[in-house]
Image (cartoon, rainbow, N blue to C red; front, top):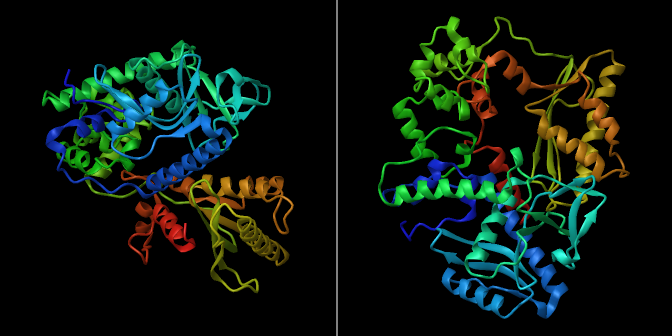
Length: 498
């Protein structure tokens, strides 16, 4: 095996083609796409969360806690190994010694002493439990399995990526002889109140597999892909479009190759593309040439068979959307409000933008914004949401009092629904904030219209159904060429000084 191939834990949840490109020496000077702004923000938020938890642990554990300083990887690995040999109880920002024999490298947020060895603990910025029972936890004040017990108020929220990262760290601890007896690891979540402990040797994976078994199979595969790339051998992974491509820095490389091949994954992605190639349908042209009367022979699960053929035909003609129906139908009303919410990651919703149009009800038509300029999370978010909801309900009420119909519109209701419900729950009792039941009643009513659903039901969209793709077909253009949900978060961050 090429000793220069050392892989981190992230490869086991990464596209195989990306692993190839990252380890192909001929690709080192190839320009890559800039990091997706949404991903960049999540990385920054996660790093800040880790720093905050490290400070908390440092205050709690004093001399029993140490943090490995920034520096060269080799130097940090030596410091980590020295701290483990000294028996330091808690080691933060640990850099594990590279396991060259098995092709592993990596770091871990926290190592905790257990028995004669160490267990890995991750610090993550997502939820790790849900209401229920059965999670094994220990308080963050005592982040060791010896202090753990079954919590009758929490159940584990499945996070496969966390388990695979822990498995990687356990194998690296074994390689340097500093592992504990138990094949176990912990996770501190976004609330940073407890450590959830996972038994990596338990059958907690589909079909009775263990996290370690799943990790070993995936890592062996990615190591083979990376080694072939490093040695210039025949690639073990070819490009194919999947959901992950959207935020991948290597997408420009793969996109060009896929377009050169007119690959079928440009129209149907993921497992459907693999299934089509298996029956000899490898290009968009071949899919488009499939007679509609033979559509049932296509082995597709993610898209209707006839739709796949029509999408291929539309792609060949560079059409952004094609009607499914002769006559379009969108619910309309006398008084209409378009609603668009902008959130800052998981911290909250800082903007509720509204456009009022239709019959005159004595209110100025056009755009108005309900916004908070305080860094989120903040109670001021509750104030702006209350003002939005108060105005919104006044428009509905006035329309009804005048015998007029009312409807409000959004594009993909999942985001707006999430933050309306979350805001009602988080700011319950504040002036103007509705109850969760009131919000739920509205979003279930016919007055709330998701235009994304209308597009999905009435159009085929070979290039996706995103608003930036669809809106130009309706004659709309943005004043700012860089307008996007991701950029809005960056502009907000700069505006409020985060």
